Amino acid sequence: MAQKLNSMRLLETHKIPYEVVEFPDTERDAEAIAGILGIPAHMVYKTLVVEPADGGKPLLAIIAADRHLDLKKLAAASGHKKVTMAAHADAERLTGLKVGGISALALTQKNWPVYLDQPAAELETILVSAGQRGLDLRVPAPALIRVLKARLAEITTEKNEG
Image 1 (tube, rainbow, N blue to C red):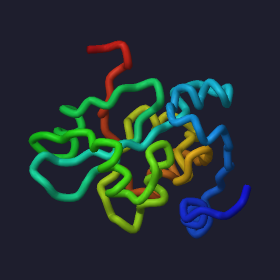
Image 2: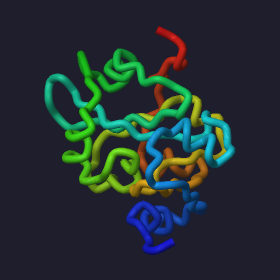
Image 3: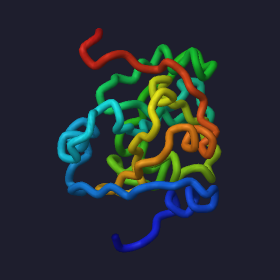
């Protein structure tokens, strides 16, 4: 791997062990990435940029590849009347990262609220973006929650619902 990313430095600063997992950087779909890596989709998490309809700081929602973000549930969990998914161009402009490589670990300096879907709390480790397409980090879920100050909330539905 070429260079160390801010996400890795952050984990090292907090003495959190991690494993770098590489995949083709042309792939942006978290479920497909799980398939390529041969691991269950419920262990690969994607970071979504969500904007409150009433303005204010964007939110980061971290959900499993096999789940669908429920905007109503996220709005309720975050205390907003309504939230909307940021368009890809807006997500990239707001984060400075490319879609497919957006990482809460690379955005901690922005102090955006981070919401992690509840099922993550039951997993020993999860994969999250390292902040660059083609790189994920396998991180202990409890440590990730701690370092991101993530709020655990039920913010998803199953993909086939609704």
